[in-house]
Amino acid sequence: PERYLLDNPAAGEKFAYIPFGAGRHRCIGENFAYVQIKTIWSTLLRMYDFELVEGHFPAVNYTTMIHTPHNPIIR
Image 1 (cartoon, rainbow, N blue to C red):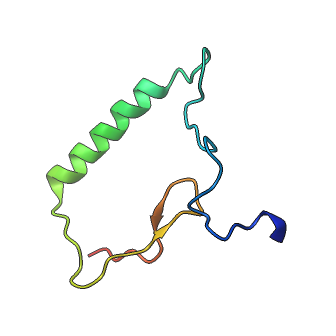
Image 2: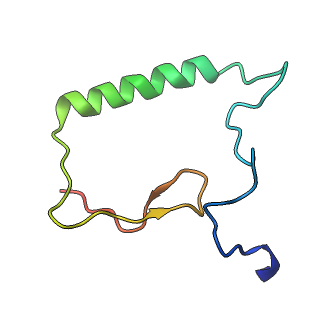
């Protein structure tokens, strides 16, 4: 509903996104997930050359759980 729309979605609620939980009972897959992320990034950075497109810097979409550009340009 419209009552949940925010003027500034980037502001959000504090601590609204806690991916692996908190406190005594944290997710047991947290360490494995971080190893996987590091492996994926290492592979991507080793195999590809990344660069920004001239004159284009994408605006970030803060309305999703994972923040991504609104209109990414991938070559």
